[in-house]
Figure 1 (spheres, one colour):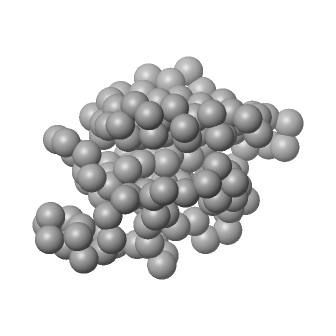
Figure 2 (figure 1 turned 90 degrees about the vertical axis):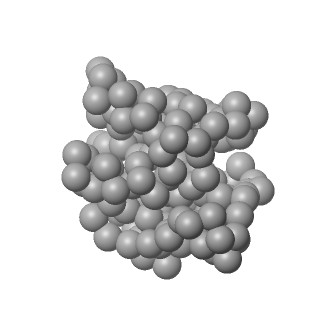
Length: 139
């Protein structure tokens, strides 16, 4: 669901590293997005379920304790299939495989610039092929 032009999109940043959450939040807030934060997948699901207004997109780290970004993506595919998800990671695909994490789509590589993050979020909100979406995987 894409917000109307006059609405401010709500973006949820999910990362266990506070500095990355702050960096991403500042980048997105600087261009007018309303940003919510979660430190892990379970907290992200709670935020999405209890938010007063719908979350328009999720940007999640892949490697996090307790619930990976891929597991969060799988949960959202069932509970909120309309919410696009961008997965991000500082690990390459080989390193993720070594950790036993099979990523079904492309990943936004860390480190990234604020502009690159904003560009990817805008693509998601426009409905252009985001890096990842619960209902479909893209590369």
